[in-house]
Amino acid sequence: MSETRIRRAYELARERYAEQGVDAEAAMRAVDALPISIHCWQGDDVGGFERAGAELSGGGIQVTGNHPGKARDVPELRADIEAAARLCPGPKRLNLHAIYGEFGSAAVDRDRLEPAHFSGWIDWARERGLALDFNATLFSHPLAAEGFTLSHRDAGVREFWIEHARRARRVAAAMGRAQRSPCVHNLWIPDGSKDHPADRAGFRARLIESLDAVYAERHDPGELEDSVEGKLFGIGSEAFVVGSNDFYLGYAATRRLFLTLDMGHFHPTESVADKVSALLPFLPGLLLHVSRGVRWDSDHVVAQDEALTDLCRELARSSALSRVRMGLDYFDGSIDRVGAWAVGYRAARKALLAAFLEPRPALLEAEAAGDGFQRLALLENAKAAPWGAVWDEYCLRSSVPPDEALVAGVEAYARGVLAKRS
Image (cartoon, rainbow, N blue to C red; front, side, top):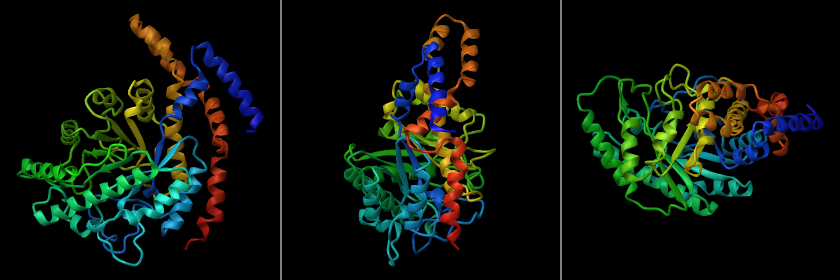
């Protein structure tokens, strides 16, 4: 579609939205108030670049597929991230896991992590105007092979992971200090058992003790924002997850931490959208991991489905949007990885834009009048509203391809770059 046609379609859409009391220009500005953090691990199937222990898959992480072109080192990963970012409109951040440091030829175990191992990432991000987020990596390691880390019965194993999490938070604080905006550090652990344990309380008591040791070290909130992430179940932890959502909800509320809501970490019939307004009054903030579970936490590439649409509506309606952080979290090795990044990011950004184009004043008026029919009709009409024309204009202003040119952009990079990787 030519620029002229995009502009013409947008003007017609803008007029139609104005008739409904919706300001399309204001909606695009509102969408730009919420950066989306791109996850580095889509680019190499959560492999990382450690020299020791990375071949072990302990901890419930499983990537499917073997599409050619996977990033094999940091320069290739950065190039792929840049290629994906060029296809994605709006403000972006980059989310790193601890296994993606630049460790050189030496084997650096997780309890020896230093900010210096990520200085290259900090410099690279600064040159591109990106802010960084960070995650401790408590999986794919010999000391995670039994399925327990911070709740392990062995005090030595627990202390190893406590030290790793401490050091990961120091790395995150260094990132926040360098970029002059808080780095979000998220903590997720794989701990759980395949069958029912005899002492659930014991595992959780040890986890509380370990977490308290991790968060005892204070950091400037202008440099670091801490979040904890629960889970419903995992591979090898089908019967019991130590750090369940209920557990971390209580922990985050009492320790004044952000709570991470991963869209794939709940029962398929459970609404993550409903949790936003229920949790924000009681927590410093929420970190939303945008994923797509199919029958289980399968981390499919994000699509603009009903769950994502409902979540973004709640964000657009929220009066506490400044306390919400959003990042992508999926890994699919069965398709072009750069394309997977672009499709998932754009789906999340599209859902946000459509949500901000909702006829909110009319909806509130109908609800206040007790007119359930009018409210339902307005919501249904919004689905067919010309938000796609606004999206094309948004892409044009962001200097990224419209939807119809996305495939060609991904394929051009695949031919020019990915096809040359053995």
